[in-house]
Length: 119
Length: 119
DNA sequence: GTAACTGTACTAAGATAGTTAATACAGTTA
DNA sequence: TAACTGTATTAACTATCTTAGTACAGTTAC
Image (tube, rainbow over all chains, first blue to last red; front, side):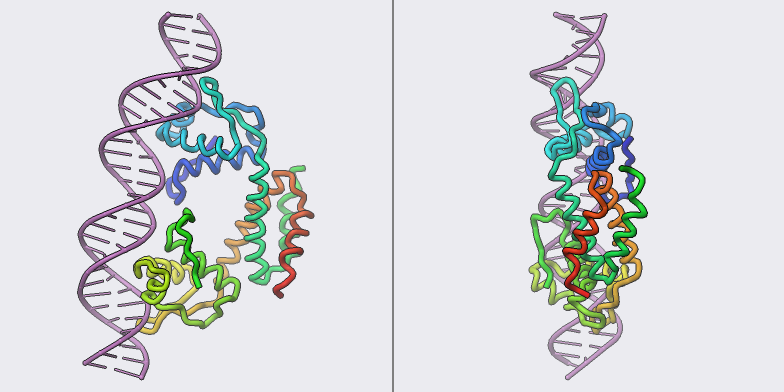
């Protein structure tokens, strides 16, 4: 479900956070779906429950999940703020590529190649 | 020259590293130009010379600068590996946006708008 | 009501990374 | 020689990450 890489520079809680963000964004886990419990996921990943708890707390504060005391955490629809964040990052990267002399047509063609299989 | 933000999550040496990478990439500092000395820049930014030294060491290992003992560090042309790194990041971000349902035409138009003023 | 789950909160301890400080040494230049 | 350059090393401090252990409140099923 979530893949940890200890050679990755990011802290574990960040990898869990990023992993779920990507999965919700991609629709791999859908709205309303139940998240694994803190203790269950900690067991699966062989890490401390506190670390999972921290990731879940951030996920909730960013609007990706809601938690109900005693019941569990449930997936929300991707928050609107995420779209803005992604677009901002897109502009940054695209800007650097254009500054390096890459043609915008080349980037557009690149998107068309990689992005046809999902509408 | 380089702007530090202590609220930024990134460590200082990383901000210096990223800052020079961006400036060299954008052509703000050109090939052959001399970098400020380790001690000089440390003084300007009011941080320890070791921190600058670490940033410069990474910059050299990535191929952005060359250092000559006793003379100083000098800017190189952007390494080819950087273009590959940028394209990889571009694909990642674009992929996430497409997964969120953003039309590739919209992203292409966005690039055209922001990228016309630099050829 | 009890048992077994759920999330949440808290404290303490250890490990690691980042940063600073203080030296020291070698090459370059005037 | 003096004043700069980069480089290396050691020690100490700090913040962050992670773990461990415990505790408490809500939910669900028996």
